[in-house]
Length: 288
Image (tube, rainbow, N blue to C red; front, side):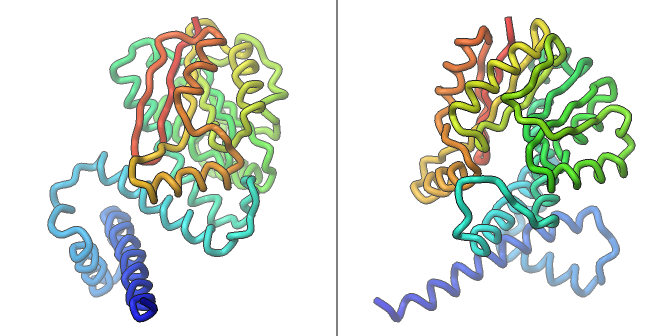
């Protein structure tokens, strides 16, 4: 049995490198500065991994693929470097935090996609958006970029991430519409302010989620929308294990979107629906 160990490790290492090549190939579609010889090898490697299918993929699929690749490589690297990290989200590496911020932009892209068939959700883009757990402000800045009439309040309790968020906002064209502050969601005390809120429950213990839902409902205007996220648990046993591990290491507890739906209903949210991708499931509801 042991003679298969190293070959199996070699095969897994090959898969990791192939994934990196695919991500690099997608990134280079918008970057012409790389040396032609290097680009040629990267493109060749990506085609070895995926075949000619890359030529048939549209921009939306490319964007999702890049998020999946960046998340997988970032998560894998952090897990390997810090397997002893407990149940929290106290990442201190600036590059890792910025990578997570870039990946998180897809959250608002998905909210916009859901809004294409929900006129009432589209109306919330004219108000104020609450970005809970804003991190380095990836979602907040993407929301401001996509919606020129939207104001954004980002809150977080991890000061190293907020330092980067303030820097990213200052370097953006949206500093007049995006603000961030150090605030625990359970201490939110606004009323009748927000038209839209994002709540990433995968980083929060159940009692905090309960308190957050109460605070967000009180801070929201009539017909405001709440989008709450959990990591999707795929049917594949290994991927389901990784989803559970991801939730636990992020500091979360809730893995079933039906739990969130029941919590939201108890606070007066209606028209609750779910939107699932391989990465995360969104539970979306309107405050009646």
